[in-house]
Image 1 (tube, rainbow, N blue to C red):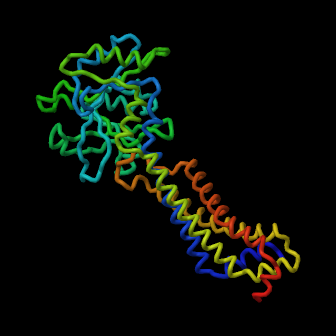
Image 2: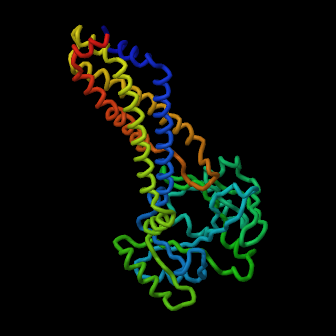
Length: 380
């Protein structure tokens, strides 16, 4: 008798139970992969942060502005090579659900510091020539089906109830983790139309340190220069700032681990119970197999193969569904700059499925292997 037909015959004995067990694996792996995708989305900012960039913000709150004149003083700090600034705009495009980051930037210096973003030269020159010009990330352009030359209305910003921008270009990233959802426009245009109390103010500065310079020392020197002033600063490396922001969102990694452990344990119980029931129902048949010459290890392998196959099929379906779901983009409407199922997450999901399949089947398989033939035949 062939091993494979016997395996399929055993799985098709209780079709509904087999289908439900496969479905439980699929649902669990789908949820597990989504959790890993969310975790990767939260950590994307840390991974994308520049190793030689520092963020200079208001000491008391990130939402408090800084004077635009600070740029020249930051450039005078030993170890600082370049500096630029940006400002959070916080407007709404058509509907409050349409979330995407909007920054007023310094067009003369911004791309020199953020070299991972690329804009065609002709489009960038058009942006520089148009005070109301704007550059949008590739993902945001696809999301709203914009095209170059469109007039983009933004409303309900702290800087005014209604603004319009001309889309002059589309930027792309050079790395998979780059944020392609941003919308840039010129800070001088913002400053020209902003309320009087907000003129001459920027949100934060980004400084690039010279090769070999200590980020810690440079950051301390910047903060010392503005100590005891009306606008004191707090300077951190870009990576440290992103990590601290992630911590404010809660311990995402711990949450993912706990939920993943619950999913793993639930799968283990469901699959283990299913395999135990299957072995108990086939006690007499397993005895017959041993009688006709099947070795103990062959019986052990048969039961483990059933459990592992159920896990592999169900897990594969769950991972595929998660991949298809994430191909549709961010379901939150812009909360995550990147919502993609990483290959590493798919590998983790596959490992979890196979591991649960083996663990759930090991006890029933060992019991089947140790089954006394004479005792089992009495049940025939």
